[in-house]
Length: 555
Image 1 (cartoon, rainbow, N blue to C red):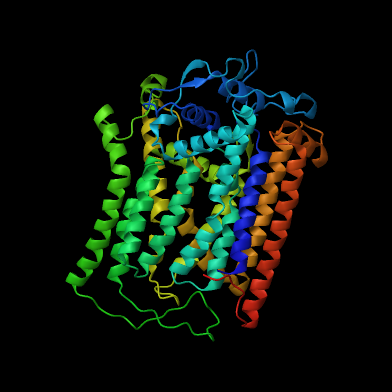
Image 2: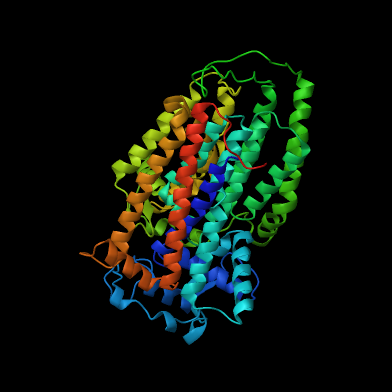
């Protein structure tokens, strides 16, 4: 593993830690509801039925105190609009020494609001509850509610820290060169919404991590890895993903496609030609070893059977149990909340209007629609980012067979999880819209579980475009878009109008759950890690250009 990949992994984790402080507590999609379920489990209760949990008063109190969006948790007498926000002036920050624990002052009382999060499988929430139980065992009781949420945010940032490493590993298992693999690793930084969601309390984070591991394993399967060990590992990852969120089902078709394509094209790729000026592209051929249908059948059925067995053992019990109790595999309280009663008289669903809304919302919320959509990238910027990605993916898919030996179908198969997720979002959102006339479920973050395969293709396309400078180009783009995202969030969330960066940072520190000194240390360490990453990246590119062995860690 090149040193730059280790540096990228550390820098990405610390960037997530910074984002965990930048976003106001409770100012993230459904974060109060996620926290309510975690607190319920940490207090020693069993996992509730999908409609069996009501929120605690502490959750509403925390949300009303800290969240920016007024519509998230309205205060009495407060005007609420889709875009109205609470300011966070430094002078109004609660005293850090006097912030209540979740069960103080009647915070553990039920407020009677149904919490929809128990509709999800239990893995993520039990893991987060275990963190709180460990924290309380060490401290002799709970910390303040804001600090417990801040701790869980840091745990989520650490959970997603390996994404650059996993993107690099996926590219290498796909038999790409070191330059393209490092580019994939660096490209993880280029999605600010990923670092925002990854630094908050959200079950999408564990799903994204598990799907990234699955994508790396399946990248090797696409290139001929048919070992039993890999098949069981793929099934185990898919099973854990399904125990995290039903969206984990997208790994099932990805497994089948990977084994079909990994055996249909049984090829030993020719050795790379160091003199080739286009290391990521060009047509190659030869070296093919044809298999009969019996060999192909054995090579597909055995691994898929092993993977399927692992999925059933790990996740089958949950879905069978839910089906037996409720008559559905994935019941939700939204079925009784979002009904035809919400639609105006004479409403007729319009597929064109829906598709337009789908494309706009999912695209914008993939790149940068932060918090409860209170801070947003302009649509033109999100669209430009998507167009850049689409062009690079097109370049990556253009050759029938590239120098790594992959064919076009194998490269296209890297997108199966992403496309499947997009299809699930479309179908579920269309169902809700056609019933209620409301545009629901149009979330870009739901696609994050499919980004590793996408980033591998982006890396291939970028290397074909700019050669060995591809990692630097990816880093430059990421630096610009992350800086713009942080600028917008600091300006919009902290301190109100008229404040400069210094005043915004002071307001952010005053409202944070952590002491100012600790935030200062985090900032210094994050900057040092970022500097190390950039130095390691430049050294990697320069060494690659000189033809010298690139510095690496032992494998």
